[in-house]
Amino acid sequence: MRYIIRAVKYFIYVVVLVTLILAVLVLTGFVSSDIDVMFRNGWRSVWLILGVFACVSAFYPRFGYGRRPVRISGEYPEIRQGVIDYMASRGYRLEKELGENLFFRSTGVFRKIARVWEDRITAERCLGGFTLEGPTKDILRLASGLEYRFGNGMAD
Image (tube, rainbow, N blue to C red):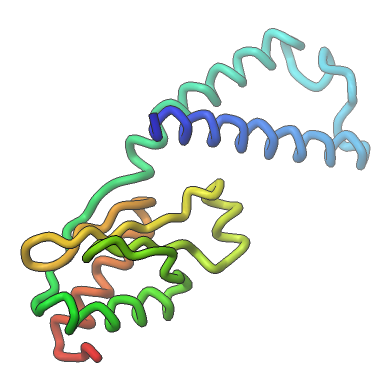
């Protein structure tokens, strides 16, 4: 269900973004407000463009979100605060904690908007560390940083 919600969110996000760009172009006079002049095939082009947006939005959650294991040695009470501090230094605040699972949200407004409020990073405790889940670009960066920090004896 989350996959479908993400796909719909991204479809709406892209449509709104392109509509705003076209509105600015029309208001500044760079483009005619007549759809038949704006697009080569008029409304047919609009429907084709929406179809392309729908296809891209349907596949984006598959590649844009993922899971990545992070190897961190130590007991949970020993590494917990270090993980929270590292995430805070990267712009994430602890949203909630369930057992040994940590849930983080972005503190940056721009990042929230750019991610269409899909900015949650979940750190599920597993054997030998955590499994991060969230936007692929973010979890790759965060996983590398956490492994470096805890792998070099720099933990708090």
